[in-house]
Each structure stands twice: as C-alpha cells, then as structure tokens.
Amino acid sequence: MTNRWACLAIACLATLLLSLDVTVLHLALPRLVADLGATSTQVLWIADVYGFALAGLLVTMGNLGDRVGRKRLLLAGTVAFGAASALTAYAPGPELLIAARALLGVAGATIMPSTLSIVRNVFTEPRERTAAVGIWSGMSAAGFAVGPVVGGLMLDHFWWGSVFLLNVPVMLVVLAGGMLVLPESRDPGAGRIDLPSVALSFAGTVAVVYAVKEAAYEGAWQADVLAAGAAGVACLAVFGLRQTRLPRPLIDVRLFRRRAFAASVGTNLLAIFTMSAMMLMFAWYLQLVLGWSPLQAGLAQLPGGLSGAVGGVLAAALVPRVGRNGVVALGLALNAGAFLWYATLGTELTYATLLIPMTAGGVGIGFAFTVNNDNVLATAPKERAGAAAAVSETAFELGGALGIAVLGSVLTGVYRSGLDLPAEVAGGPAGAAARESIAGAVEAASALPAAQAEALVRAARSAFLDGMHVTSLVTAVLLAVVALLALAGLRGVPAVIQETEGAAVEEDGPGAQAARTRSAGEQ
Image (cartoon, rainbow, N blue to C red; front, side, top):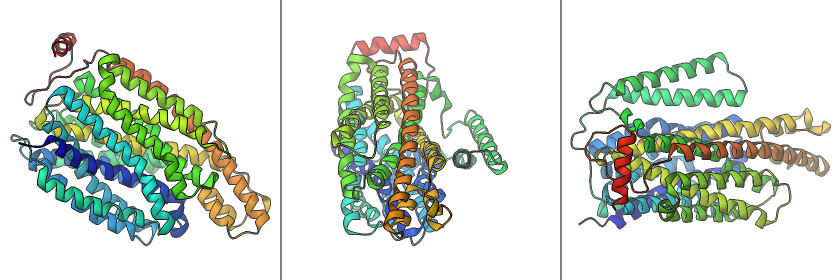
C-alpha cells in the first residue's frame, strides 16, 4: 500500500526547492549585477526568463506526465534541474546566465505539475486532500522563507553562483526518495500529445509575455512589440479553438465552465501578479537602502515565508467556518493591508515595523493559494490531474512573470524619473550607472570621492524609495480589487468539493451547484 504521507513529503521537498530557487536569485541580484555588469534590461530577463520558459511549457509537461507517468516525468525533471543549476552557478556572463535560467525553467516545468498531480492522485478523501494541498502550499511558502537565509549564508562566504549549487544535493534526495516511495500513475486513455497544440501554446504564451514586458519597460508600444503581442494572441486563440475540436485536448476548456475552477485560476493569476514584485523589491530595499548584509536580509524575511506555511495549514480548518470565498478574500485583504504599510517605509527601520505586515501578508497568501489550488484539483478528473495542475501553475507562473515585468518596470520608471543626480557625476559613467539601477549607483559610488559617493547614494536611495512607495500602493489597490472578485467569483462553492469521476466535465449551473452543496452537507 502506498504511503501517501511519504509521497507528500517528496512532492513538498521538490516544491520547496523550486521556491528556494526563486528567492535566492532575488537575494543574489545585487552581487550578480556588480560581478557580471548586467544592465537593468538583463536583470529583468534574468529574473523573468525562468518564469517565461516555465509558463510556456507547463501545459505540455502536465499532459506529458498524464501520458508517460507522473513519477517518471518528476524524476527526469529532477535530474535536469540539478544539471541546469550547475550551469547557472558557473555562467560567466549575463547572456549565458539568461540561457541557463531558461533551461532551469524547462526542467522546472516537468516538476511542478507532477508534484501537485501526485498529491491529487494519492489523496482521494476530500478533507484529507485539502489538508495535503495546504501542506504542499505551506512548503512552497517555506521555500520562499528559507531561501534568503540559506542564500544569505552562502553569499556571506562565497560568490553569487554558489546559491544555485544548493539545488544539487536537494535534487539528489528527491531523486532517491522518489524512486523508493512514489507510485506511478497516468491517464490510461490519454493517447498522443497534439504537437501543433504544444507549439501554439508555447509560442502564444511567450510572445504575449514578451510583448507586455517590453512595452512595460520601454513605456510605449513599438511596432515590433505590437507585432509580437498580436502574434501571441493569435496563437492562443487558435490554440483555444483547436482544443474544442480534439478528443483529448491539452486543456479541456470545459473545465472553465466550472466556477470554482475558472475563478480560482483567475484569482491566482491576479494575486501572484500583484505580489511577485515584493521579493525583488525587498531584496534591493533591505540591502541597498538599509545597508543590510545578504544574511541579515534573508533572516529579516524569514517570518513572512514561515507565516505563509502556517496560513497554508490553517486554511483547511477555516474553510468550513467562513467558506472558500471568504478564506481567499480574507487572505488577499491581509496582503492589501501589508502593502499599504510597505508604502510608509523609509531609510530608517525598526524591525517590528517590517515584521507586522510581513507576517500578516504571509498568512494571507497561505490562505489564498491553498484554497485556490485545492479548488482546481478537486474540480478536474483524477485522470487529468497533471493537465489541471499545469493550468493552475501556468496561471501562477505567468502572473508572476508579468508582475515582475510590469510592476518591476513601474518601480524602475519611477526611480529613473525621480533620480536627481549631483551635478558633478550626472554626465559621467557614475551617472549612467546610477540611471540603470540603484545597484549600479551603489557600485559606482565605491569608486568616487567620499563626498560625491555620499551624494550619489543618497539620491539613488531617495528615488528608489519613491518607486517602492508607488509600486506598493498600486499593488495594494490591485489586491483589494482581486479580493472582491474572489468573494463574488467563489461564492457558493461548497466547503467539501466531491471527486469528479471519469473524463467528463459538467458545466456549473444552479442544479449542479445545489446537488454538490447537498452532497457536501451529508459528509
């Protein structure tokens, strides 16, 4: 008999690693910029390309897992992720680092839907499944918390690439444990993957994300950006139309007729869009504005991630009391309040001022993502668990990549427009470096006379704070709007969502919803 809790532990460890990889990158960015001489555009690509590759391939890899076996795909992806991590660690320049991060995204796309679909298949009792998804979501949040601490320890003693080598031993543990305890599962009637759909989904996703990113950074829609955006939308439209005509589509579009599925996917996308810039913003703020070391910055953010793990575990207990829509809306509202608080931060900080909103926001995000992920898994048939998990993860990654691109560009735009450089450095190389980013300003200041260096750093920090405040206010407003949308969109979804049998997916309607609610009440 399968030990489902051991399976959950392996899935959580793999998820922990993927989360850790994102946070250590953000922590390493200031050092990376200084060592590799990356421009602000390259920095955005280094941060974004992992998510772009992941988002473009998740649907394909989720379906591949349903066909060839989720265990097999997870173990293959584990090996590939470890190898790509080593390549990332030793990248000699920004261009090769971007390429290595793209390879990490491809490998990560094999892991993410596999872990969640394995959880879906080994936990079949509804309440137990919700608790397992909460633990899985909590471990993802824990990865965001532990990553900065472990990464900070590494950066205090080694070069920036060392943080990526952390992935290799963890991947070996996942590989060995997965071979021993994970059961194999697949969709027996899946058939072949439709290759034109693979090409359309990847091309459409990447083209749209590229267009939005470039438009946000440049502040205008250029001809090439418009062309990329139009091509991406066209590819996605053809992809969607093709799915309605295939007997075994990559995405069963009928799932979106179920309100719990559609609202949860949409809420996750919008929520992670608004929150994705936070870690990038805080990595710069804590190190370059407050002057904390990477380890201090990592330790400072630890309670936020750990409280996210707590929120993930508590979500299952709250659902019967306030409803699924209430838990998600409460979580997003807590985050909106946290970002309003962040908009008041300055160049001097007592830790309690940061701890309160960070902890509240972490619990909130644990609430929201746990319930939304469980909604997605519960409303899809077990046989298509990989495909359903891939849709959820695609929305998550696409929202994250777009959030970094758009909100990161808001931060950069406000910084540049508000940067008042001292006259003695404005026309020189130090001024040019400062206009690229606050990291460039701090690095350039190290080669200037003391008085000029102090004036340059002061101007850069003031401009960065302006950008951080504007970005935080925009994020708070968006989170409040998404909370209201979740409250309405998930209204009436029962606390206990029953198993969806077979491949058929029914449309939500008053009768179907009432029947599910009555069934839930009998549990």
